[in-house]
Image (cartoon, rainbow, N blue to C red; front, side, top):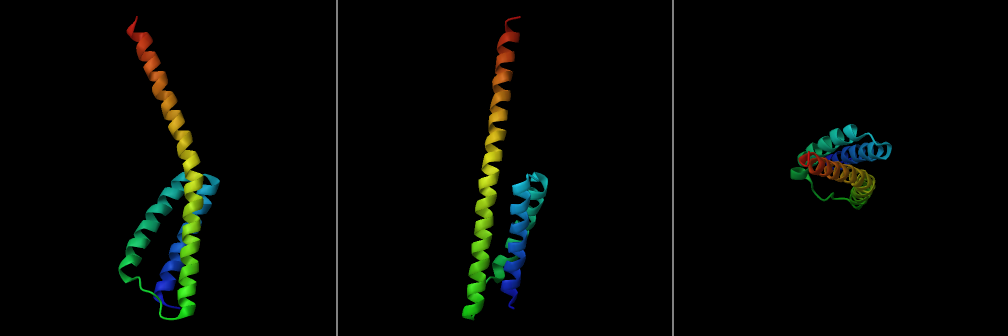
Length: 106
C-alpha cells in the first residue's frame, strides 16, 4: 500500500472518531480530534499525489468519500448544537437588556 493511501486511511480514521464524538455529544473530544485532523491534513497536503494504479485510485476515492460523509454528518450534528448555543446566548442577552432597563429606573 502506498504512503498516500496510508495517510488517507489515518485521516479517515480521525474523521470517523470525530463523527462518533459529535454523535454522542463529546464536544471537547471533537475539538481535540479536529485539531489533530487539521495537523494531519497539513502534513499530507504537500505529498499528496494521484496514485498510479487504478486500484489505488479507487481506494483513495473511497477514502475521500468516507471523509466527506463524516464531515457532512459532523456538520449536521454540530449545526443543531450551535443553534441551541445561539438561542441560549440570545436569551441571555435579552435577559441582560431587560435587567439593565429595569435597574436603570430604580
